[in-house]
Length: 166
Image (tube, rainbow, N blue to C red; front, side, top):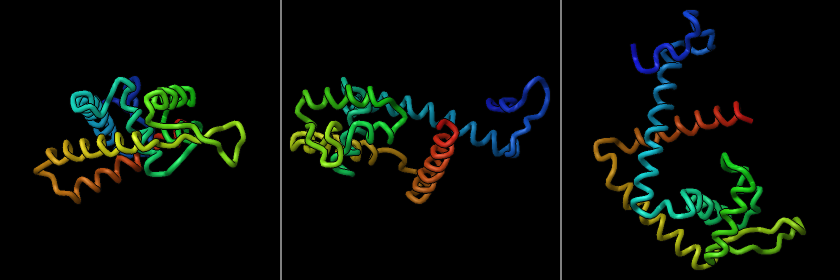
């Protein structure tokens, strides 16, 4: 019996899931591996400085601004599985460090936009370079095409989970 066998069973009755048991077990195994990988990534992020005293969310927050431009705190919160209040605290902490600033929002008088400052963009670029440097040391025996397929599978499953939690 695998570590995930029996997860879809209740009191000896077969799971009435629309997926075949083997596919459900494969997805469950992937979920468990991704969770374990997450904790290892977090430990590596702490070691390399990607995860700071603000937590891992600071890099993601700055990445959103670097890629999409100025956003409101509620927009940033909608992009991730966290609360608007958590994102507001993070925005305030990053602003106190001079990495982001609040600017007027032409579309909404009271909801300010958050944008990276020049030091914030420099810090984001520094963290991104560190991430790429660390990433270049991983997966030597794995083909790039396999990694890209894995990214797509995880992205699709993440979307399915998001739909179920909304």
